[in-house]
Length: 479
Image 1 (cartoon, rainbow, N blue to C red):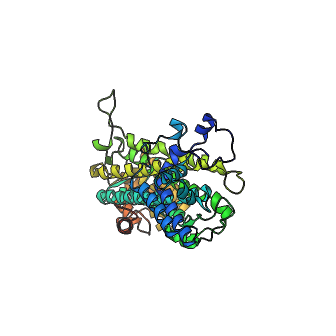
Image 2 (tube, rainbow, N blue to C red):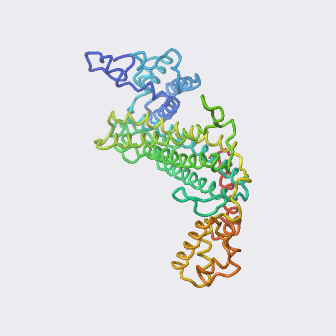
Image 3 (cartoon, rainbow, N blue to C red):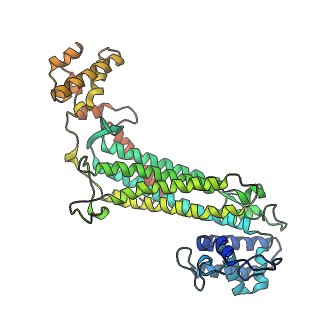
């Protein structure tokens, strides 16, 4: 057996170095080190309780494993002390599981370390490690989401009664409160939190004790083992347990949709901070400059948020393609789950953290809000007025369209058309029509639940703030 392999007793030739480098995973799965130590410690206790280890042997193994964790061996970029990634050095540990077992062997000797694998496979171990890792990272993603929701709520509160154009097809449509738009983005991120929570709930099942695929002969108490690791239950089918990566796909999907939403938020903020729109300032702390044009203040952070969405969506698509057509039980293809997952989660969490900083710095510019006349964005209000006077809405819509055409032809705001002109459109128009052709009044009339009226927006802001406070209180987030 190679010193850096957990197999090879029946092999007569060493692994070709090129194949060795191609197959290794320690260069990236070292992130699972602390999870691997936790899984091994729980397994040692289960073996002891099943009578497969003496109390003394279990204590020595547990101390060795605890020592590995306490040594703070890196789970990130640099190589662990005295070790180099196999991909870089060649002949290094094949994977994180090999590394941990060899470290245990160095502390307690080969005979006792060799008992660590009793009744257990790397297949059920990696499935457990990955769930433990996902549980931690998923909880972190929820904290990051909560911070962004709080940031959007705080910005909405600072925006107050600032009225801006609402757009469809990127064309001015109807006046809305800027806070209404910001809270719409908060709603998206709150749904993202629900998706991550659902994914975490579905993965709350422990595969350890499933062996390679057929289960274990050691009479371990798998439910107790699951509880030791903080899982709600043990997997019901050993074959499914070692090959299930639905939870990876779930988290990648959740990460991809987070990034899609961040891309949409970024686009709205890029527009809102542009001189042509200008409802928000882009402070120096979250902007960059041009190497040629001194006047430029570029929204590079927001553009990167937009661009990275494609990266995470690609990770999801690639991983789903990896899963396609795999036969039952573990296959080495599943090694491809980790780099996709790690990059997807890293990108989503890093992007959320960046957005939270941007949101803290943005400042509303009330002087850039809509004038009271709001131009032809009040056409729907005119149609509603005529419908309220008894005209069928389809006909009222036509009349309002004619009024807009007249306003454009004469270069006059819709609200400034003479009453006599409006009455040529419909004799139902009265002097009170001008009470309707006013931006703040238009916003205030959208008072049905979910609308942009100030009182509805205030209620929604209170709800979103309460959600963010609760998230911070229960550990999901820290707005």
